[in-house]
Length: 253
Image (cartoon, rainbow, N blue to C red; front, side, top):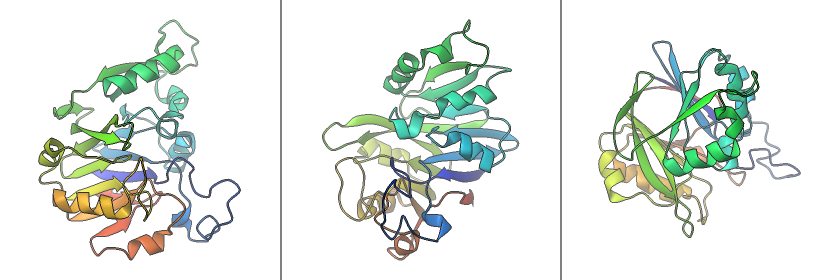
């Protein structure tokens, strides 16, 4: 299975508008980060997790001509706002999107035109299917398990991470329940949100994300959903078994 990191930044992206910090002015291309998303490919099949602001640019950069399905982690704008560009992939047949019920309710309310079978011909043509937590399913030939975790130490927003066999992807997270750790046994490669060195109210720090990865027993850990306080090179020096993901990084798992 081929995994491409389409974007690895937090909600601001990097560079941040108007910022003159060292990371925003960095000449290392790995420090330029679109909003977080991944694409998985196997045997000609292709799915995406999240469609952020730069979804169109990500699809153009990776020369993508077709998608089989889209998974969503949650309904925050930096993970969702590129949804209208699914129109390109849904003209010949409906595109099915998957997530937890609260996320799909939000999408169907705020993008209702995309679910109207009698709507404007150029609109996206979407259908939505809710996934049960911790229940393995097959979507477009990919076997995956939705992982219910919490986003925010106060709001406790329910979001989904996803396990795909030996690989798992968890972004905006502050709490992972014990039953999710149990469901992650055997994961070898983990992509997990690590915002910065300091603690944050809605995201794991690098240390918290690394500790979660070690508890899972992952052999390789990649931080994603990163802000502009720490460069890619600096992150790569923090731990022997963890690296910074960057836009365009490809893994074979």
